[in-house]
Amino acid sequence: MRLKLTAPLQILFLVGLSLAIVSGSVHRATAATPETAPAELKSAIAQLDAAANRRNIQEVLKFYSPNFTHSDGLNRQSLEQSLTQFWKQYPTLTYKTELQSWEPSQNGFQAVTVTRIVGTQTRDGQQVRLDATLRSRQQFQNRAIVRQDILSERNQITTGEKPPSVKVNLPEQVRTGQEFSFDAIVQEPLESDLLLGAVVQEPVNSAGYLKPATADLDILNSGGLFKVGKAPNTAGSQWVSAVLVRHGGMTMVTQRLNVVAGGSTRPAPR
Image (tube, rainbow, N blue to C red; front, side, top):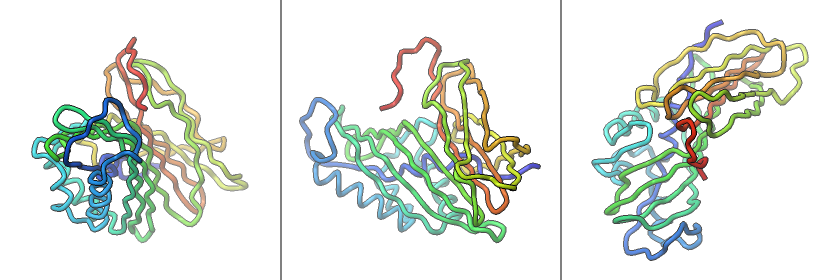
């Protein structure tokens, strides 16, 4: 069975809009806790969340530098295009961002945030539910976001009245060419239900955002997917998705796999 779906995490960077900008001078040498953040920073996070919740693209873009760059190859123009399309697909969205840490940097500071986004859309007469979480690091200079790097992400899309509850086991980071285990386990008993599933692995790049993808579903003999994958020979990031379908619903869970150069001592994102 072949299933067409929205490619795994085209929405991912869109989840991380809710960032922050702060004015004034900060005098700290190491990453600081959210409680010590300036009031301007906390206020800016709330303002950008509110702009995203209203789907006000021009208000959102005020927080981004014209020279904005992204670890997935996006820029300010592609940000605007992708957000506009994404908001058309999901007319009901709620953004909620938490500041994890912040520290001064050249001409500004860095901030690590976690954003959760939930929403629904109607596709072919069915309600599609989105629940995504993105952890990212932002670089601010001259009161604007100039750089964003994705540290980790998880996205879940469900349809139907009884979608399977899925637990995913995937490492956050592997070396180039390294094999890795990927498990997607259905948590509730299947009883007499037939379970179909597939794994989709794609490189993360700006061309993949909001681009339809297909998955060839196979009948599964167990309560989930248990695969051994292999990282590409080039460093970068991969979207790894599990698609599971049972009577009454479908669940697709996507997580990001960071691939580092063989022998690299770079630690996993904190």
